[in-house]
Amino acid sequence: MDKSRWLLTGKKAVVTGGSKGIGEAIVAEFIAIGAEVLAVARKAEDLEKLHQQHPERLTTLIADVSTPEGRAKVLHATQELWPVLDILVNNVGTNVRKPTADYTSDEYDFVMDTNLRSAFELNRMLYPELKKSGQGNIIHVTSVAGLVHVRTGSIYGMTKAALGQLTKNLAAEWARDGIRVNAVAPWYISTPLAQTVLNDQQYSEAVISRTPMQKIGNPEDVSAAVAFLCMPAAAYITGQTLAVDGGFTINGFQP
Image 1: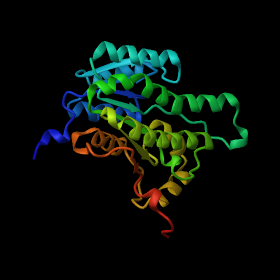
Image 2 (image 1 turned 90 degrees about the vertical axis):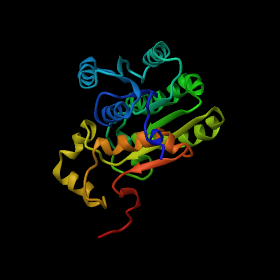
Image 3 (image 1 turned 120 degrees about the vertical axis):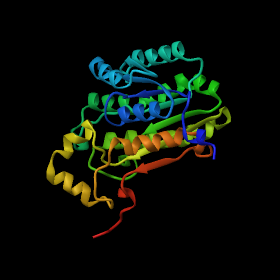
Image 4 (image 1 turned 45 degrees about the horizontal axis):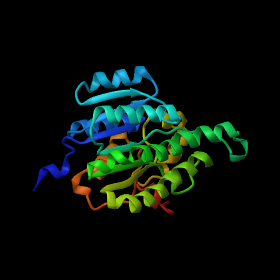
């Protein structure tokens, strides 16, 4: 067996939201299997801590990809670092949990710009760099909230569902350019963002009760799926959304 099929040796990867939670795990996973990574996040202290953990094959960039200026910084940094780009992981995300009728227009714009527009625009901007690779990969980190109703707020669910459809559209449109596009859809994962609600014991128990595997996932559960989808071993997989959810989305009624 050709073991290189299960590695990302020499691949160049951009990971947004790369300093915490799932993004941090993706960065670590990619580096462990041979990739060079540009990790993008907003806070310098988080990126400095990340760089201390991974001093080799990691470059960090302070940028807010929800803004045009932040996205321009990502494009410039990518072009300065590498002649081609092999992998783009659109992982950055945020949420405002409210009943739908209580949202303000500013909150709508904030969640949409962070979760959806950032990915759409970065895909377009970095498309020429991915095309040069001939084996480009885009991964959207979506959520089961884009597949079924969960109590995370309607705007968040809208953004994640839209990313799932964008995955399908781009997979078909850009296949001729050697670019594969896939998504992973996590359920509750032990991250700083999810912990804000999982700290409520009653809520956490309710989440676990609806999850056939009876546990909360770890960031590494998601990063492994992301890494696999980018490997040569997954070369015939595109346009798919893989739920990393302990069975949540297929659980009908299991008393």
